[in-house]
Length: 202
Image (cartoon, rainbow, N blue to C red):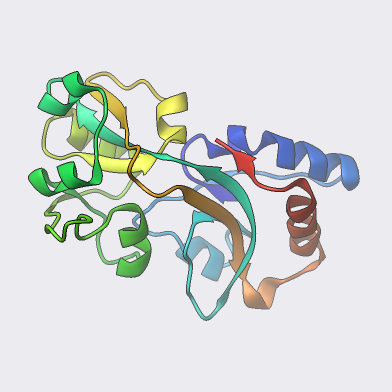
């Protein structure tokens, strides 16, 4: 199961339920990067990913939602927003956000990192990053800010980075996603367990 950052810990109730329902079965976690969310599924390196929605890829199946949560904005500790304690989507237009590159479809990136604010202001893309830790390094250096799922704030306290709640940002939904041609018994069993358990609120 490919996940972002520490989401594997949040998914513990799902993993425990799956293990209890199917003795002898297990789940191993791998890391997914926002810059390349689908390749490991398409190559068969991972069986499923937990991805924020929407996912609209013709060769991938979107299963049950497993996580729901809000968003935070990662800013440097000396950024003017850090003293304010919260951030809004409009604040993004006054800063650069990370460019995740060509490996992820724009529609999918934009659902986490929009291209325009609710008022229509353009949100400028800045330096490129591939991994979560590269994003945090750029933020800490003051080169950009970046929206993330609030699980990032719960399980990370990197030096030089502050996570600000974004109360006006729409809630995120994260769903099991897999290659449609690899819809085997184990994937179906995991998906049914997730559907029975319902989404975990972050």
